[in-house]
Image (cartoon, rainbow, N blue to C red):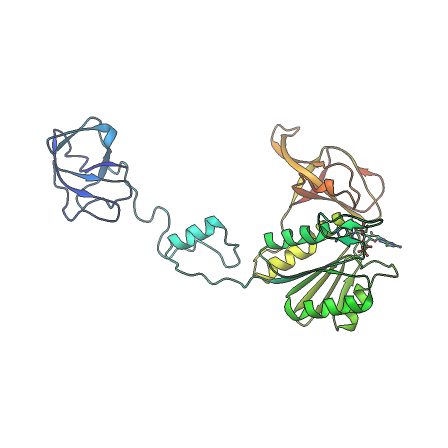
Length: 348
Ligand SMILES: Nc1nc2c(c(=O)[nH]1)N[C@H]1C(S)=C(S)[C@@H](COP(=O)(O)OP(=O)(O)OC[C@H]3O[C@@H](n4cnc5c(N)ncnc54)[C@H](O)[C@@H]3O)O[C@H]1N2
Ligand code: MOO
């Protein structure tokens, strides 16, 4: 605190001010019994002093200061080691460095920290129907929202974007675009063209480029046609073109991959339980429902997490992503999960 450094047990009567300790400029003199040293917030406590009286609790005149309130030992003094202690581990390997972690690392004396390289990501959006954002649309054309969405998701996960291309629905163009992306990127993310249509060229092009298929199709809705392959250390994810399917499969497959590439100790987000506020039907694939998470008192009076679907859940309903802060997982089956039942959720 801004005030006077004193000895708490020898601080009655007007005390002569024998020096000053400023932030970054410690007092060369120490505080004797019955003396005071002017001190600023953040300045080292001078030798001999064990407490600081706030300037508001003092009256100063003629080079002396009178304390108008009692001071206790240690009052307004922060001890070395209250925050970080020598030898203590303050950050684990695999921790994502945000503002808080950087402050702690620098506070602990680190001038540099060893980091994983940002994963290099190429985003390839396939489809003859795609037009640039804002461009006028002809019949059957739509705006390429996945490119913008996937780039934002990848950057948020720490990726460096090395390519962001639109690829025509032609075999040669598809192969050329993927060949270039595979030269450059740790993770190639494609959107569209992985289903079973006659113009879905992604899988044959990747096979021709020596990318080994690890899986194709997952029992998820949305996300069924998701494709994953590898070539050496290169990872390729083919996400379904439907915008909501792309978003959800990015979160379920690309996000953990990007975290693992950056050395995360726990790349998979934890699953929690939340109580559904409205019933959801079970189906032949596991449903991944976008939900708003909240906290409400349960039957036992204790607070618990609740999950409320964000409205219609079709894989073309991009508005189902707005306001969604969780994904809820409805297991395969018949009937429904009733309101009031618990289901697993993952935070977005
Ligand atoms: N006979 C079958 N047809 C389909 C099946 C199936 O099992 N049998 N699966 C369906 C499912 S589920 C999905 S999901 C889609 C995914 O197909 P693709 O990944 O090949 O995606 P596209 O056909 O290229 O596009 C689907 C849809 O999304 C729009 N789209 C594509 N790219 C973008 C983009 N960059 N930005 C915005 N919107 C995009 C595209 O115009 C289509 O409307 O296949 C079903 N079919
Ligand atoms: O899997 Mo698709 O993603 O159901 O619409």
